[in-house]
Amino acid sequence: MKKEPILKSVSLFALASFSLLTYAQKDSRPNIIVILADDLGYSDLGCYGGEINTPNLDKLAQEGLRFNSFYNTSRSCPTRASLLTGLYQHQAGIGRMTFDEHKPGYRGTLTSNAVTIAEVMKEAGYHTSMLGKWHVAETPLKTDQRKWLAHQVYYEEFADKKNYPTHRGFDDFYGTIYGVVDYFDPFSLVNGETPVKSVPEDYYITQALSDSAVVYVNRYAESDKPFFMYLSYTAPHWPLHALPEDIAKYENTYKVGWEAIRNQRYERIKELKIFGDRDNFLTPRQFTDTWEDNPTKEWDARAMAVHAAMVDRMDQGIGQLMEALRKNNQLDNTLILFLSDNGCSNEDCQNYSPGENDRPDMTRSGEQIIYPRKKKVLPGPQTSYASIGAKWANVLNTPFRFWKAKSTDGGICTPLIAHWPKGIKKNIGKITEEKGHVMDIMATCIDLANTHYPQTYKGNKIIPLEGKSLVPILKKGKRKGHAYLGFEHFNEKALIDKDGWKIVQPGGQNQPWQLYNLNEDRTEMQDVASLYPERLAKMMNQYDEWTRKALVVPAP
Image 1 (cartoon, one colour):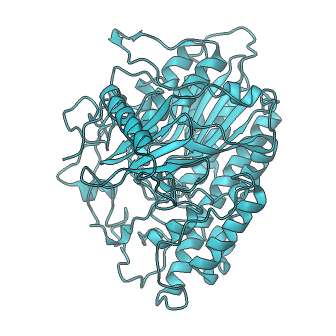
Image 2 (tube, helix red, strand yellow; image 1 turned 90 degrees about the vertical axis):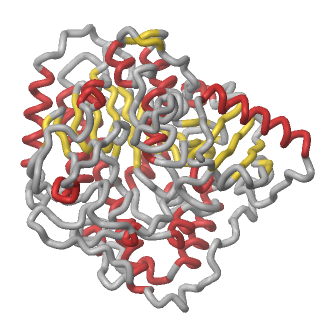
Image 3 (tube, helix red, strand yellow; image 1 turned 180 degrees about the horizontal axis):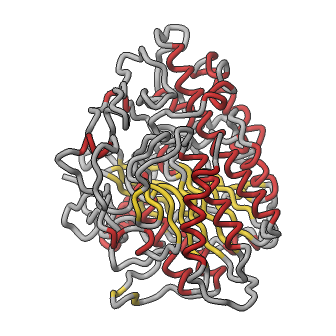
């Protein structure tokens, strides 16, 4: 790929920003890079049992620490809100999506009563940068939305600019404001605050984000100040868009079908001891139809090949970033955290209505984008808009049940890799069962920056920090964790207590609460609510307590 046009456009902005930076004393505090994948399956990475080629992330795992019980909020924008602020997503203003429901926990954008990691780190003397998907600002719809999505009309703002990353503590930003984008010609692409009105013909957003991250790292190496970087890939979220050379690597991999890939992943998970010496923890497959009887084998195998290619290209870019850190002698004192925003998606986006919200129906040149409802057009190129669907999502979230937007662990449990050669002192190359949550990343950054979480910021009273630092886990192997972790998204509810028990209420108010002992039943296969009514009642009370504190309002 030709990369120079993207590097040039980003570096000009980056260099302009650099001229404004002030001199700082030599600083030994670590750099911090948070890398967020989008809709990644729990077992997609090689180091978590997958067959996708991810040598760079695998290397980070071998030299660092993997978590097997790290949690998100089950969907993209709520997870990002929680990660960025150290709060539960409702407290941060995004209890559901980026639309204002006129309730404190559901404003559709980050509240002024929360601070971002970037705002705190900038005050602490760090350079701050973000690349990729923002998706935490209320995004308006236009009367000519379909033309706007196709870059045929232009508006200066994709959201109120006061809610852009550059107004929430980030010195540098290159990425998208909206949630879902075309990988070859992304809508809502912004450099700083300026819309990027055109991209090169060979543009691919995953590669552009990686290239831009390298530009930032190289520039920051010229300064004595440490940096905080938030690298928020859109991959591998639908639409299934990938480069032909990456797809070719997986041309035959998935022709063996759902059952075979799922069983292979499970065996590899056991071999890697992701869940220790546990056995018999593979949940029953959620579908009875077989690959042999599947009338769309060719399409489904290709769809998974494209998904794998998207993950592969992201891993290649992370390798570039690691090499840039190494060349600048900064790899050893940089904490890298890699995770996903939620479990793999079950959505069939090819059945959505094109031309609505953030889903285009034509390219910049007016060429029709096909949503292959009958799976007649293969995914991969810009003119096809598709996703892998529920059956592959069940495979990619092996060994768990369900997927994105659910409160079972298939929706809310994410792989997390921590890499910091200078700082990680325990369990190097191993897996920890210590529990954590995306809101803990803010507290971790505060800890490492030797700074504090403010009570007020720019005249606004700030909601107290909910997250807890992960640093004790990295340095000592354990910490005193949360009394409990609460979850709610569109009435999908759960709570995990400090003793490793979990309650789940799927699908709304009228469903009974389920109870699982994750210590013995890690993948939630045995509902023991009827055996432990007192524990269930206690945890239901904890959940009610949490909803009041966290500004949760049940969905109608």
